[in-house]
Image 1: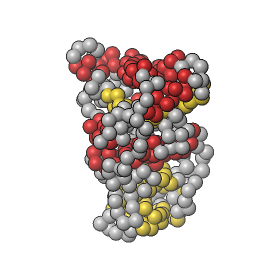
Image 2: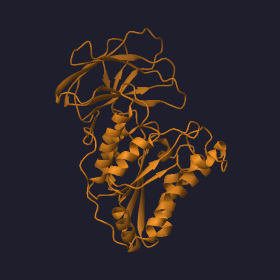
Image 3: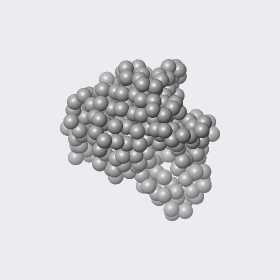
Length: 364
């Protein structure tokens, strides 16, 4: 394992000091998106962006926020190009430590460690070879995250990290802050919480800035730590494939941005509606909508016409914070070949049920 390497961050700071143009990017879940901040400019990401602008007034900076609430690194690695890397960030703060916890069919640290590594490698090998800083947010009500899993990857790649579990959460337990000061719902920071998260990040950046002219060992990308099957994940929507439709309908409504999630998929409105894909991959997942709006249709998924490889996807979401982009993994480290994936809406005889919405396939 490598020690933390600041070569890329120092290079960005030197460029900024010379007055160059840089893009500061943030990629992650709801905290990165800015949930619970009263205005976006008070979220941690924008505050860190502001630090760069004030620390290097001669430079020209662009702000890039690719956060989507309720999403994990599995989805992240499949969307990182079109939602984020295509804008060529120079610095990336990466935040999935409270999101890589649950999954319908896998849900273990080893799985998410592999998807997280794929995401890290995808970013590090971006065209501008950005500097990456890992952020470990925390569930303040439970004290949980998956930072041990993520920081093993970070250590392997020599990436600096900032942990809210090791800092703000410990300070809260020691009585310096109450939970209510940091977060209203136990998870998403308040304005004050976002300010304190940003302060932890900018404290580290400030320390690095003090030594930015000191030489650092050149950064060399190591070989993968895991099986790394997800580095080149692809997200397949109506734009990338033409499945066989037997009742399912194409959702052709135009997508307006990366937060406009429930677009460009396929809709099953009644029992027996079917959709069939034939795609080559060794890892396959289906992404579908779980809706808070009353009863919702379910669908049965069968892989390669094998009754033993069957999943039931329930479109009803039991939470109340909004519709969720759920992912069901149906093949992990399988045989790389062309697989047959079929989904059929079940006959649940629900009156006024929300249609079943298949958002995408995620292939690797």
